[in-house]
Structure formats: structure tokens, C-alpha cells
Length: 159
Image (cartoon, rainbow, N blue to C red):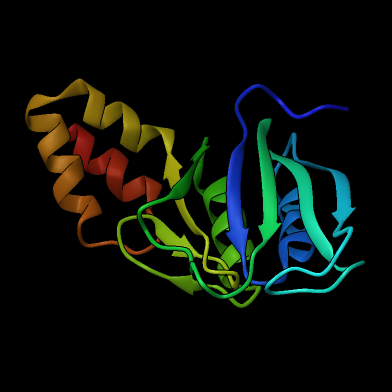
């Protein structure tokens, strides 16, 4: 299988394969496609070490690169996962934070490899798209949350 025309390349210190396998086990339409080993020594590894991992996250083509510690993940990049209800929101949130990750604000969390995730219920996205007072109420409610509380967002939407 060849890489997609456009692939997201994610820089990892050394755990691209473990991260890809976690994502594949956690999210639907996510798979590890190929693990490639370095044909020679490189600045942060040796010949035979896992160099790249081809995988998908919710159908999005990704390449994990074990490039060493020079470039850590930041909030400048995140995956945004749309959820249908509180159960799905909770499942993904707890999978990420419960596997060595950490909670943040407004639906954001970080996995143990430093990659940032937005676990975003569709009701919040719909409220923001509606604009006006509905968006303002939902936004105000969201600003008080870590993990998004679907019932609280729905109540804010209704006013």
C-alpha cells in the first residue's frame, strides 16, 4: 500500500509504533498499515530501529516518524474527534487521559506521547455554527469545562 497524496507526519521521540497501535485500538477506521525500519544509523537511532509507521486515525493517513527528542508535540497541532454523545465523549477522553495522558480545558487533552486531541461533541460544533446567542451560551459553558459535558452544552443551547 502506498502513502496517500497528503499524509500528516507526526514526529515522535521513539514511540511512533506504540502510539499508532494505541490509536488503531482506540478510534474507529484506524489501522497500523506498515512499520519501516531504518536501513542505517541516523542521529537518534540505529540501523534496524523503527523509523516510520504508516497508520490511519479515523481514516486520516498519518506517518509516525521516530525522529528523536528535538521537536516535541505542541498544541499547535491537534486531532479533533467529533463525538455523538456523552458515552462516546467519555470513552475517547478516558482512553487518552487514562493511558498516561493529561486533561486540559475546553475538550482538549494530551496523550502520553504529547499529541493533543480535541474531543468535541457535535452538539458543541452545531451550537457554534448556529451563531448568535446560542453560540455565546454554549461557548460560555464550554469555557468552564475540561471534558465536555454534553447535557450542559445542550442546556446552554436551549437557554
